[in-house]
Amino acid sequence: MSAKVQWFAKDLLIIGAGFAAAMHIGKLPAAIPILQAELGLSLVQSGLLLSCIQCAGMCFALLIGSYVSKLGLKRCVLLGLSLLTLASICAGLTQSVLSLFSMRIIEGFGFLLVTLSGPALIRELAPIQSLPAKMGLWAAYMGGGVGIALITAPMLIQSWSWSVVWFSYALITLSFLIGIAWFIPNTTPSSQAVPLKSLIKLTLQHQPAWLLALIFGTYAGQWFALVGFLPTIYEQNHIAPTLAGLLTASVSIANAVGTFICGLLLQRGLQAKLLVILGFVVLIACALLFYIA
Image (cartoon, rainbow, N blue to C red):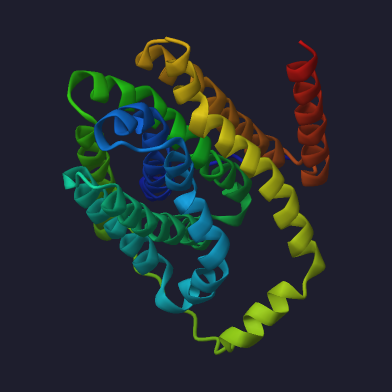
């Protein structure tokens, strides 16, 4: 039996913050060709720049996640949005590859703070009966945010410059920062005194966590490689930047639609295990068709 889902402004603000954070992931692929031309960015440097945020997640997600509940969920979301805003503004002002790398790493920490705290904040504020649908929409933040960026960034670059993309997305992030600071109630930091060393040890000894990390890492690595370099591949094949952005965005937005549909199906009582198996079957079939066709 599915429960009727009520959506509130506070839910959409938090979910919107996730989309805004993901837009900072998606702004770079569309800008790589112009950054290569203006800053002399090599293909290897482009790959490193694309992977900075993912490397920050791989190295520090467990550490940051262990402190999120202690610092307070709302506070962590605001801190993450602040880092994204400031780093994006500073990167837009730079003309140095090294500075661009530095700001990208800071954006990585901001992205982690938002995406690690956001789901927990939704769980704290949303009624339990409507949680699957809301978490389904939250899960669409990466595909949706990257898709929006892949559509809008080429238009802004074509009309103005890559710096305008960085400034525009900083303004969007700032608007969500103000909205959350004003409308979302403060959360109480966790008082559970679990030593960090014990928490990390417990997590690393949990075998299902390793399996999930391997499964998701395998999927995410392919997804980021595809979405990250598709605009460059299209550009090398003389496809217009705006059309290249739209074509790449279709990949990302399909991901967002799929996650939201899964949330609705969970809301209607379907088992998560069944949906995961179905997802793997579709991925295998698409991969085979890609190489056979």
